[in-house]
Image (cartoon, rainbow, N blue to C red):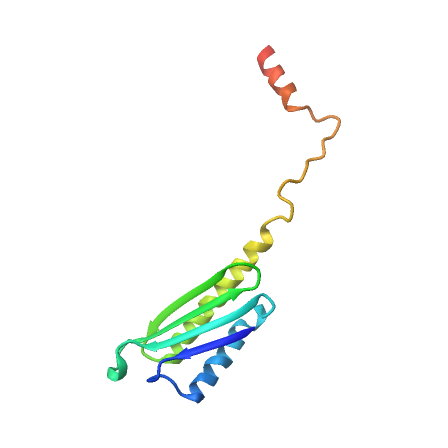
Length: 129
């Protein structure tokens, strides 16, 4: 699982980016075999003014097929990141469960027993009654 972090200059700090990578690994590590890359983008939409202006976008590219994208906004970086990572983990879990529910062979042939009547015999019985 490769983690790619992009932070705006006003948000960027080496200590914060290490925390972001660590939290991403903790949140998504159980799906590591199914995930190719995790891309995290953190931007400050209003600049240094303050307020609810930190946006976090977490994009998870699955190894099989598909991509999960989650975004959130808040006042501080780490709470917004935690919210997005937990939502991404739930969504990845659901998509992997859904993938396992699909049968391997969609066109399996039914084995007919000798006592089981054929469809044409049902139609004949209905018309003659």
